[in-house]
Length: 284
Ligand SMILES: Nc1ncnc2c1ncn2[C@@H]1O[C@H](COP(=O)(O)OP(=O)(O)OP(=O)(O)O)[C@@H](O)[C@H]1O
Ligand SMILES: [Mg+2]
Image 1: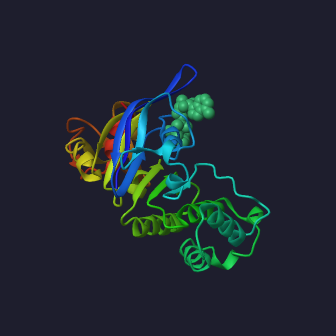
Image 2 (image 1 turned 90 degrees about the vertical axis):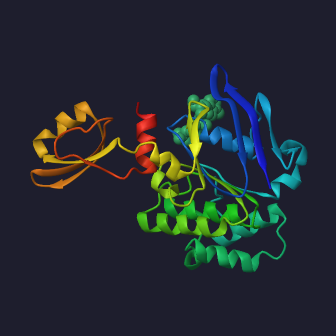
Image 3 (image 1 turned 180 degrees about the vertical axis):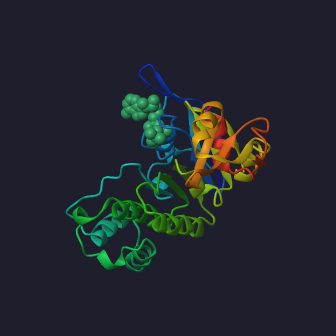
């Protein structure tokens, strides 16, 4: 199973959203990471055949996805960044409706399972217009996974979720990802650090780095430090270094910061994370 994006470019007027992007996806979770406007949603809209691009190709098993028509759509589950959910439907009606559109036969048992997984089974007969943002977000994931799609494209699936739901969603995605190509765009690096096989750093429509989360994190080794200092010296450190995190009580403060050399006496080298590397690369 292989989905290939080859030399794809896309502009909106003068604005180049993607520049000659080449990526190959095989089963496993891919994390698409990059700041606002880097082209994540544009790429997802192209991969799901919702947006025309200017040049290049997108193929599945060697066949252009636009030529596959319905055959491609049946392989696909897409959770858009801003999903439109019909307010007059109940959660359950909405999922039956999506199942019908996807041509899923006898979806009832599957819908029961999915509603339980996304913790909406107790509100399944409530209208979606009464749902909170996080509930709509979970319903949007539910509609994407109906029909057990081979390709799952999730645009910021954990946006607006509380920490408990975020962990539940992460575990659920990880569990259903066997034998699927899963592409997740997110700003929350820690959501994908332990579940993605590959992280892709996208900057201004160009892939600037990609690899396993641990191999990318390793690139920050020796440049991440923890420093214990007085609260009144925080500004001084912030002026000189990229400070990733500050915590502490009263006058004592711990900071996690980036520095190519040891920043001060007593600083300790920290084990780098994917988030450290993300900040190192994107906040230059
Ligand atoms: N419909 C559109 N019309 C014009 N420009 C667009 C359109 N959609 C996206 N763009 C531009 O394309 C670029 C990439 O946008 P895109 O939405 O793909 O970024 P993103 O990485 O998903 O950002 P975010 O993290 O904010 O969701 C941006 O410069 C954006 O302004
Ligand atoms: Mg986006």
